[in-house]
Length: 456
Ligand code: TYD
Ligand code: MG
Image (tube, rainbow, N blue to C red; front, side, top):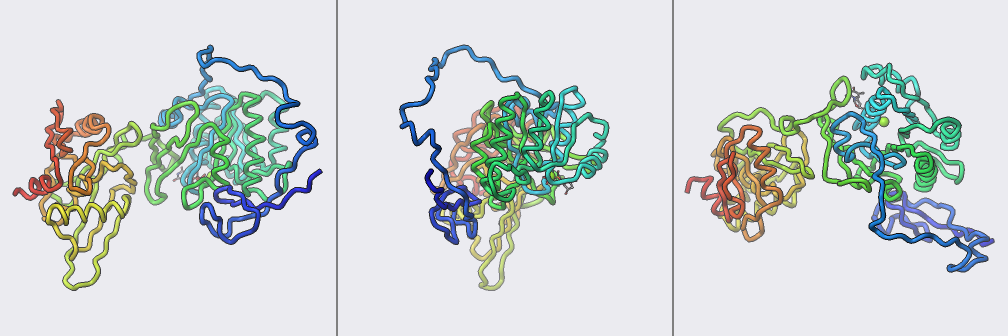
């Protein structure tokens, strides 16, 4: 038999190198390469060449009958919405998120709901002792739910136990980084251990029709530690996001083999656990006073779900020639620099002697390019000390030419704004078609918009 070759696997991105290096050449992370046993050619493979030795498989047509996979709704509407209707039997779901964001809390709540509804649910914690989980359940008012609880980290022990009886409908593994498979060597949490443990658990889930949920902690750059190799092994990847200092949490499908990835679930972390937020706009819109300068409401879109957020800008004139600061929370700083440049070059507004601060209220992070116009409105309002028209929302993408481009899902954004009592919308010129509920004002260029704001 061939001797296994030494190989080095990056623990951050899973890429393989033949020599140890301080930095991964693929993802540029430092000190992430760890030696792992390489692939060994089996005697069977050595005996048969590529086109022999296997069984014939049956090829069928695309339009053959299909049975839709059975879904198991958790009863937590925001969770089910993000999942696309509930957990799918015999599938694997990975839920990733920063430590302490509330993954265990969410899954314990979902597990308790399903167990109370009569499903068999097993919750295996590799991080907390059984008593800790029990105390948490009690604090959440779920102490009486018939969840089968275990504190274990050995995949073999877990699967031996579960194989003995009727397999559970739902199996939660919290977290996959604490699991250990004895099929291969290595400490829990390394790429190969995470991969091997997941493989065994997923095989069990597929064979027995159990819906498997793996909890995974993420690294600071947002990838699920131990890491992307897991993302393609599972059917569904969910990201649980939010700022620990803020209450809200967003559950987002990153990948879903059984549904779309454009729905989100919104929760708020309360003293009695995560509660559903059916109307996220109300959560992010802080109390609004009329006549305040430097604030605009932006109807952002999360998948197909509109969320109204407040964009705040503060502009401080500097007396000396010191380099002014630009500080952004919740938005892209490169994009802010671009809007400032367009305001200067195309509209004759100079921010070069001013410090500029931009903040999205409520700790929300905006990634939607449609925020450009709302940001520009907040900046112009802060600079000119004139308030943005009250009861107005703004959206539109700003091009380097100063043109205001139309954006996706205008009607959805307008509908949400109308629902929350807004009366006006400042929109791209091309989108200023009449809308029943709102008065629309369209602008073709940013210069036109600035003239309007300044009453020129
Ligand atoms: P947890 O679910 O343990 O996070 P994860 O599993 O993602 O690491 O969440 C822990 C945090 O949630 C902790 O900092 C306290 C907070 N929390 C509440 O605010 N209310 C609650 O009812 C619970 C259970 C936790
Ligand atoms: Mg946890």
